[in-house]
Amino acid sequence: MSLSFQVEWLDAPGVSDIVDSCSWARLVILGADGDPLTRCFDRKTGQTREGVYGSVFALARWIADSYWNLLYEAPRVPRARSGRELARYPGLAPWLRRHNMLTAREGYSLPDISLARDGEHIVVWSFPDGPPDQNNRPIQFLHQGISWHSVREVDAALQVFMGTVLERLRDVRHASVDDLRADWGAILASREQERDLCEWAARLGLDPYDPDDLPQADEQLLIARMAAVPEDLRGDVLDATDSVAGARSGSDWLSQLGAGWGAAPPRGNALVRRSNGVGSAYEAGYGAARLIRKEQSLRASDSPILGKLASAYGLQFETEVVAAPPDFVDGLLAAMPGSSPVILGEDLPHEDKSFRWSRALYLWRFGHSSRSARLITRSHGRLQQESRAFAAELLAPAAAIRSALRSNVVGDDEIESIAKTFGVRAKLVRHQIENHDLAMME
Image (tube, rainbow, N blue to C red; front, side):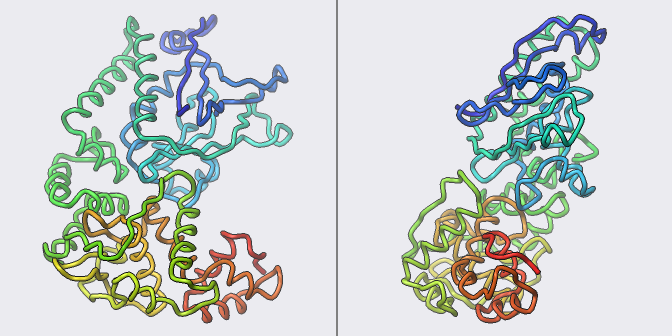
């Protein structure tokens, strides 16, 4: 069972607003395996229940406003975080409004749920409101978890919910209902007529229907620039920036490299193996790194390893130094026709070059570059997160770091020493220690 919205219409005595009165319901949101994401504790009754009561109109308005972003925009943070935690960071407020259900409450109770694109799936984050003795909220949501759903199933769930609400409000004549009906109609029409543009704008975090977000000139520019870029490479550009200007700079840089570099690298002896996209991107990356080490009979303590891996997989370690890419791009994995794959980008210090090369190896070895060249970027899209986790575990395996630690508490000097052993940045070792719970930071 995938994501679904179950609505039971109820009378609303005492509710004077016609829209809220007609859209009053018991709402149950079900996640994976039928788990109720709306499970909550009602302080007034002292009971736990699966659904929440109130008007669902604001939720429908939020879905219509955020529809394309919910389906196509990637997270802007590296890890699942609650909406209340993310709200502390002003720069994340626009993303939060598009993706977190708390922003749709308008006086009613809704859980802390975020939806976003995660590779070939939609990831759903659900966080509880906290223990009953730590706040005075009349309704406290209890569910916590992360689940992955197919885009098609989530899209269907959103459409069923919207259809249910609009059918309920069919005879209501009110400006807000008329606006919602018109906006949803435009979305349904766009699915047939302007789907590509809406998807591309949403991946940038823009509203394709808002002329302030996407003026006509930007719309035309986006269409002209992105239509000429191969699909996978286009997605890399769009997920890594948040503006049409950024998308333009990405396409301009690709154009400077020349058309020949857009070709898919030859498969050579690389085994195409994709992760199924379900589960943590970090776990997928770590698992792929361990597979590589096992495949090449590398021990956790072996270092350096890049020369052997470059020879084994036919991927050049030295980078083709080219014009500086946009600040959100680290490099391009590509090949000229008939040649081995190379990495194009700025010259970097050895530690950073090794990390970039390892990320490129992930794209090459696990089949993500089979259709076109691919960017190595700083986005939090799934593929980029997988490649970063892969590079960290490949270059400085958690098991080897664990063996090198002198105690359960580690300081900066020890981290620097371990980093030198593996030829990586101290930041990478610190992330490995934190992500694998290897020790406490001093």
